Length: 317
Image 1 (cartoon, rainbow, N blue to C red):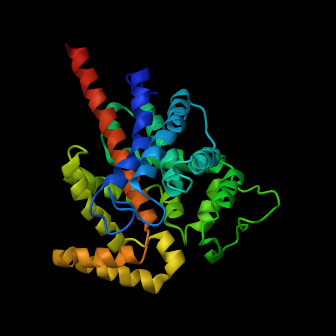
Image 2: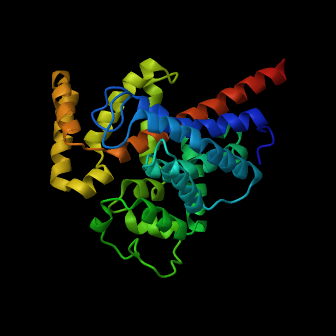
Protein backbone atom coordinates (compact mmCIF):
# COMPACT_ATOMS: atom_id res chain seq x y z
CA UNK A 1 0.00 0.00 0.00
CA UNK A 2 1.21 3.48 -0.88
CA UNK A 3 1.21 5.17 2.52
CA UNK A 4 1.95 8.60 1.00
CA UNK A 5 -1.37 8.95 -0.83
CA UNK A 6 -4.48 9.56 1.28
CA UNK A 7 -7.68 10.91 -0.22
CA UNK A 8 -9.62 13.49 1.79
CA UNK A 9 -13.36 14.14 1.48
CA UNK A 10 -12.89 16.90 -1.10
CA UNK A 11 -10.61 14.64 -3.14
CA UNK A 12 -13.24 11.90 -3.11
CA UNK A 13 -15.93 14.29 -4.33
CA UNK A 14 -13.66 15.52 -7.12
CA UNK A 15 -12.75 11.98 -8.16
CA UNK A 16 -16.45 11.02 -8.29
CA UNK A 17 -17.37 14.09 -10.33
CA UNK A 18 -14.86 13.25 -13.07
CA UNK A 19 -16.46 10.06 -14.49
CA UNK A 20 -19.92 11.56 -14.02
CA UNK A 21 -18.97 14.68 -15.97
CA UNK A 22 -16.80 13.09 -18.68
CA UNK A 23 -19.82 11.65 -20.49
CA UNK A 24 -21.18 15.23 -20.73
CA UNK A 25 -17.80 16.68 -21.79
CA UNK A 26 -17.70 14.22 -24.70
CA UNK A 27 -21.24 15.18 -25.74
CA UNK A 28 -20.19 18.86 -25.68
CA UNK A 29 -17.51 18.31 -28.36
CA UNK A 30 -18.67 20.40 -31.35
CA UNK A 31 -18.60 19.55 -35.07
CA UNK A 32 -18.69 15.77 -34.61
CA UNK A 33 -19.87 13.88 -37.68
CA UNK A 34 -22.32 11.79 -35.66
CA UNK A 35 -23.67 11.37 -32.10
CA UNK A 36 -24.71 14.22 -29.80
CA UNK A 37 -22.40 17.12 -30.55
CA UNK A 38 -22.96 20.30 -28.51
CA UNK A 39 -26.27 21.68 -29.85
CA UNK A 40 -26.70 18.93 -32.46
CA UNK A 41 -28.90 16.01 -31.46
CA UNK A 42 -29.30 12.53 -32.91
CA UNK A 43 -32.32 10.23 -32.71
CA UNK A 44 -33.82 10.79 -29.23
CA UNK A 45 -30.58 12.08 -27.69
CA UNK A 46 -29.52 15.67 -27.03
CA UNK A 47 -27.23 17.70 -24.78
CA UNK A 48 -29.97 18.30 -22.20
CA UNK A 49 -30.29 14.58 -21.58
CA UNK A 50 -26.55 14.25 -21.10
CA UNK A 51 -26.60 17.16 -18.64
CA UNK A 52 -29.14 15.34 -16.49
CA UNK A 53 -27.23 12.06 -16.93
CA UNK A 54 -24.08 13.59 -15.44
CA UNK A 55 -26.03 14.72 -12.38
CA UNK A 56 -27.67 11.33 -11.91
CA UNK A 57 -24.36 9.45 -12.13
CA UNK A 58 -22.45 11.45 -9.51
CA UNK A 59 -23.77 9.58 -6.41
CA UNK A 60 -23.07 6.23 -8.08
CA UNK A 61 -19.44 7.10 -8.83
CA UNK A 62 -19.07 8.52 -5.34
CA UNK A 63 -19.95 5.08 -4.00
CA UNK A 64 -17.57 3.39 -6.46
CA UNK A 65 -14.69 5.65 -5.39
CA UNK A 66 -15.37 5.09 -1.70
CA UNK A 67 -15.64 1.31 -2.15
CA UNK A 68 -12.29 1.28 -3.95
CA UNK A 69 -10.57 3.35 -1.26
CA UNK A 70 -12.02 1.10 1.46
CA UNK A 71 -10.87 -2.03 -0.40
CA UNK A 72 -14.40 -3.40 -0.85
CA UNK A 73 -15.28 -5.26 -4.04
CA UNK A 74 -18.17 -4.14 -6.24
CA UNK A 75 -20.49 -5.97 -8.64
CA UNK A 76 -20.17 -3.99 -11.86
CA UNK A 77 -23.43 -5.42 -13.25
CA UNK A 78 -25.45 -4.17 -10.29
CA UNK A 79 -24.01 -0.67 -10.58
CA UNK A 80 -24.76 -0.59 -14.31
CA UNK A 81 -28.33 -1.74 -13.69
CA UNK A 82 -28.91 0.85 -10.97
CA UNK A 83 -27.50 3.66 -13.11
CA UNK A 84 -29.48 2.74 -16.23
CA UNK A 85 -32.68 2.34 -14.20
CA UNK A 86 -32.19 5.83 -12.72
CA UNK A 87 -31.48 7.27 -16.17
CA UNK A 88 -34.47 5.80 -18.02
CA UNK A 89 -36.84 6.58 -15.13
CA UNK A 90 -35.80 10.22 -15.08
CA UNK A 91 -38.56 12.29 -16.75
CA UNK A 92 -36.00 14.54 -18.45
CA UNK A 93 -34.15 11.60 -20.06
CA UNK A 94 -36.24 8.41 -20.43
CA UNK A 95 -33.75 6.80 -22.81
CA UNK A 96 -30.37 5.08 -22.70
CA UNK A 97 -27.60 7.66 -22.66
CA UNK A 98 -24.73 5.74 -21.08
CA UNK A 99 -24.79 1.89 -21.12
CA UNK A 100 -21.49 1.44 -22.98
CA UNK A 101 -19.81 4.24 -21.06
CA UNK A 102 -20.94 2.80 -17.71
CA UNK A 103 -19.56 -0.63 -18.58
CA UNK A 104 -16.20 0.94 -19.41
CA UNK A 105 -15.95 3.62 -16.76
CA UNK A 106 -17.22 1.92 -13.59
CA UNK A 107 -14.45 -0.71 -13.51
CA UNK A 108 -11.89 1.80 -14.77
CA UNK A 109 -12.76 4.31 -12.04
CA UNK A 110 -12.56 1.63 -9.35
CA UNK A 111 -9.31 0.26 -10.76
CA UNK A 112 -7.62 3.65 -11.12
CA UNK A 113 -8.31 4.56 -7.49
CA UNK A 114 -7.14 1.17 -6.27
CA UNK A 115 -3.97 1.33 -8.37
CA UNK A 116 -3.23 4.86 -7.15
CA UNK A 117 -3.14 3.40 -3.63
CA UNK A 118 -0.97 0.41 -4.51
CA UNK A 119 1.52 1.91 -6.98
CA UNK A 120 4.17 4.33 -5.80
CA UNK A 121 3.95 7.93 -6.95
CA UNK A 122 6.79 7.31 -9.40
CA UNK A 123 5.18 4.13 -10.77
CA UNK A 124 1.84 5.92 -11.18
CA UNK A 125 3.38 8.49 -13.54
CA UNK A 126 4.14 5.76 -16.14
CA UNK A 127 1.14 4.76 -18.29
CA UNK A 128 2.44 1.22 -18.85
CA UNK A 129 2.40 0.61 -15.10
CA UNK A 130 -1.04 2.14 -14.74
CA UNK A 131 -2.53 0.11 -17.58
CA UNK A 132 -1.02 -3.14 -16.32
CA UNK A 133 -2.41 -2.55 -12.83
CA UNK A 134 -5.79 -1.32 -14.08
CA UNK A 135 -6.13 -4.30 -16.41
CA UNK A 136 -5.48 -6.80 -13.62
CA UNK A 137 -7.95 -5.15 -11.23
CA UNK A 138 -10.60 -4.78 -13.95
CA UNK A 139 -10.48 -8.44 -15.01
CA UNK A 140 -10.73 -9.49 -11.37
CA UNK A 141 -13.77 -7.21 -10.91
CA UNK A 142 -15.48 -8.62 -14.01
CA UNK A 143 -14.90 -12.19 -12.84
CA UNK A 144 -16.43 -11.36 -9.45
CA UNK A 145 -19.43 -9.61 -11.03
CA UNK A 146 -22.51 -11.69 -11.83
CA UNK A 147 -24.12 -11.48 -15.27
CA UNK A 148 -27.68 -11.62 -13.90
CA UNK A 149 -28.07 -7.86 -13.33
CA UNK A 150 -26.46 -7.14 -16.70
CA UNK A 151 -29.10 -9.27 -18.41
CA UNK A 152 -31.77 -7.37 -16.47
CA UNK A 153 -30.29 -4.13 -17.81
CA UNK A 154 -30.45 -5.39 -21.40
CA UNK A 155 -34.04 -6.54 -20.96
CA UNK A 156 -34.91 -3.10 -19.58
CA UNK A 157 -33.41 -1.34 -22.62
CA UNK A 158 -34.17 -3.93 -25.30
CA UNK A 159 -31.65 -2.56 -27.83
CA UNK A 160 -32.77 -3.08 -31.43
CA UNK A 161 -29.66 -5.04 -32.41
CA UNK A 162 -29.86 -7.87 -29.84
CA UNK A 163 -31.28 -10.40 -32.31
CA UNK A 164 -28.19 -9.92 -34.49
CA UNK A 165 -26.00 -11.51 -31.84
CA UNK A 166 -24.98 -15.13 -32.41
CA UNK A 167 -23.05 -16.86 -29.65
CA UNK A 168 -23.03 -19.55 -26.99
CA UNK A 169 -24.19 -17.39 -24.07
CA UNK A 170 -27.94 -17.23 -23.26
CA UNK A 171 -30.17 -14.82 -25.17
CA UNK A 172 -31.36 -11.81 -23.17
CA UNK A 173 -34.88 -13.29 -23.11
CA UNK A 174 -33.66 -16.47 -21.40
CA UNK A 175 -35.85 -16.96 -18.31
CA UNK A 176 -33.70 -19.50 -16.46
CA UNK A 177 -31.07 -18.85 -13.81
CA UNK A 178 -27.91 -17.30 -15.25
CA UNK A 179 -24.80 -18.43 -13.37
CA UNK A 180 -22.26 -16.81 -15.66
CA UNK A 181 -19.93 -14.04 -14.55
CA UNK A 182 -19.90 -10.71 -16.38
CA UNK A 183 -16.38 -11.61 -17.53
CA UNK A 184 -17.67 -14.75 -19.28
CA UNK A 185 -20.50 -12.91 -21.01
CA UNK A 186 -18.17 -10.15 -22.23
CA UNK A 187 -15.57 -12.68 -23.39
CA UNK A 188 -18.11 -14.46 -25.58
CA UNK A 189 -19.46 -11.12 -26.82
CA UNK A 190 -16.10 -9.56 -27.66
CA UNK A 191 -15.98 -10.80 -31.26
CA UNK A 192 -19.00 -8.62 -32.10
CA UNK A 193 -18.94 -5.89 -29.46
CA UNK A 194 -16.28 -3.19 -29.11
CA UNK A 195 -17.12 -2.37 -25.47
CA UNK A 196 -16.76 -6.01 -24.47
CA UNK A 197 -13.48 -6.32 -26.38
CA UNK A 198 -12.14 -3.10 -24.82
CA UNK A 199 -12.79 -4.49 -21.32
CA UNK A 200 -11.48 -7.99 -21.93
CA UNK A 201 -8.35 -6.64 -23.67
CA UNK A 202 -7.75 -4.21 -20.76
CA UNK A 203 -8.54 -0.84 -22.39
CA UNK A 204 -6.20 -0.69 -25.42
CA UNK A 205 -8.20 1.96 -27.33
CA UNK A 206 -8.81 4.01 -24.20
CA UNK A 207 -5.07 4.30 -23.51
CA UNK A 208 -4.20 4.92 -27.19
CA UNK A 209 -6.79 7.70 -27.32
CA UNK A 210 -5.48 9.07 -24.02
CA UNK A 211 -2.03 9.58 -25.58
CA UNK A 212 -3.61 11.43 -28.50
CA UNK A 213 -5.64 13.56 -26.09
CA UNK A 214 -2.54 14.42 -24.04
CA UNK A 215 -0.70 15.52 -27.18
CA UNK A 216 -3.53 17.92 -28.05
CA UNK A 217 -4.80 19.20 -24.72
CA UNK A 218 -2.96 20.47 -21.69
CA UNK A 219 -6.35 21.41 -20.26
CA UNK A 220 -9.90 20.34 -21.06
CA UNK A 221 -11.14 23.66 -22.42
CA UNK A 222 -12.99 24.99 -25.48
CA UNK A 223 -9.93 24.72 -27.74
CA UNK A 224 -9.41 21.14 -26.56
CA UNK A 225 -13.02 20.26 -27.38
CA UNK A 226 -12.54 21.57 -30.91
CA UNK A 227 -9.39 19.43 -31.30
CA UNK A 228 -11.20 16.37 -29.94
CA UNK A 229 -13.67 16.59 -32.81
CA UNK A 230 -10.91 15.33 -35.10
CA UNK A 231 -9.99 12.56 -32.63
CA UNK A 232 -13.63 11.43 -32.81
CA UNK A 233 -13.39 11.40 -36.62
CA UNK A 234 -10.17 9.37 -36.51
CA UNK A 235 -11.78 6.80 -34.24
CA UNK A 236 -14.68 6.39 -36.67
CA UNK A 237 -12.23 5.99 -39.56
CA UNK A 238 -10.18 3.31 -37.82
CA UNK A 239 -12.52 1.46 -35.44
CA UNK A 240 -15.73 -0.41 -36.26
CA UNK A 241 -18.51 0.94 -34.04
CA UNK A 242 -20.50 -1.93 -32.50
CA UNK A 243 -23.93 -0.31 -32.82
CA UNK A 244 -23.36 0.65 -36.43
CA UNK A 245 -21.97 -2.78 -37.29
CA UNK A 246 -24.89 -4.66 -35.72
CA UNK A 247 -27.59 -2.42 -37.19
CA UNK A 248 -26.15 -1.62 -40.64
CA UNK A 249 -23.68 -4.44 -41.39
CA UNK A 250 -19.97 -4.62 -42.25
CA UNK A 251 -20.17 -3.38 -45.86
CA UNK A 252 -22.11 -0.26 -44.85
CA UNK A 253 -19.67 0.54 -42.04
CA UNK A 254 -16.64 0.09 -44.31
CA UNK A 255 -18.18 2.60 -46.74
CA UNK A 256 -18.70 5.02 -43.83
CA UNK A 257 -15.08 4.59 -42.79
CA UNK A 258 -13.92 5.33 -46.34
CA UNK A 259 -16.03 8.50 -46.38
CA UNK A 260 -14.65 9.66 -43.04
CA UNK A 261 -11.09 9.00 -44.22
CA UNK A 262 -11.79 11.27 -47.20
CA UNK A 263 -13.16 13.86 -44.80
CA UNK A 264 -9.92 13.74 -42.78
CA UNK A 265 -7.89 14.28 -45.96
CA UNK A 266 -10.11 16.99 -47.44
CA UNK A 267 -11.70 19.44 -45.01
CA UNK A 268 -14.02 20.85 -47.69
CA UNK A 269 -15.89 17.51 -47.72
CA UNK A 270 -16.63 17.64 -44.02
CA UNK A 271 -20.01 19.37 -44.00
CA UNK A 272 -21.27 17.26 -46.90
CA UNK A 273 -20.30 13.99 -45.19
CA UNK A 274 -21.59 15.22 -41.84
CA UNK A 275 -24.96 16.07 -43.39
CA UNK A 276 -25.11 12.62 -45.00
CA UNK A 277 -24.36 10.77 -41.76
CA UNK A 278 -26.82 12.83 -39.74
CA UNK A 279 -29.56 12.37 -42.34
CA UNK A 280 -28.89 8.64 -42.04
CA UNK A 281 -29.40 9.01 -38.25
CA UNK A 282 -26.21 7.01 -37.76
CA UNK A 283 -25.42 7.16 -34.03
CA UNK A 284 -21.93 5.70 -33.52
CA UNK A 285 -22.31 5.68 -29.75
CA UNK A 286 -19.58 3.15 -29.04
CA UNK A 287 -16.97 5.52 -30.50
CA UNK A 288 -18.21 8.27 -28.18
CA UNK A 289 -18.09 5.87 -25.21
CA UNK A 290 -14.41 5.15 -25.89
CA UNK A 291 -13.59 8.85 -26.19
CA UNK A 292 -15.53 9.72 -23.01
CA UNK A 293 -13.67 6.95 -21.18
CA UNK A 294 -10.34 8.40 -22.35
CA UNK A 295 -11.36 11.88 -21.18
CA UNK A 296 -12.20 10.41 -17.78
CA UNK A 297 -8.87 8.57 -17.60
CA UNK A 298 -7.00 11.75 -18.53
CA UNK A 299 -8.75 13.85 -15.89
CA UNK A 300 -8.35 11.34 -13.05
CA UNK A 301 -4.65 10.82 -13.79
CA UNK A 302 -4.13 14.57 -14.09
CA UNK A 303 -5.92 15.26 -10.80
CA UNK A 304 -3.95 12.65 -8.85
CA UNK A 305 -0.59 13.63 -10.37
CA UNK A 306 -1.13 17.35 -9.71
CA UNK A 307 -2.34 16.59 -6.19
CA UNK A 308 0.80 14.54 -5.55
CA UNK A 309 2.98 17.40 -6.82
CA UNK A 310 1.29 19.91 -4.53
CA UNK A 311 1.70 17.58 -1.56
CA UNK A 312 5.41 17.14 -2.32
CA UNK A 313 5.90 20.90 -2.41
CA UNK A 314 4.00 21.27 0.84
CA UNK A 315 6.11 18.59 2.55
CA UNK A 316 9.38 20.21 1.39
CA UNK A 317 8.36 23.66 2.56
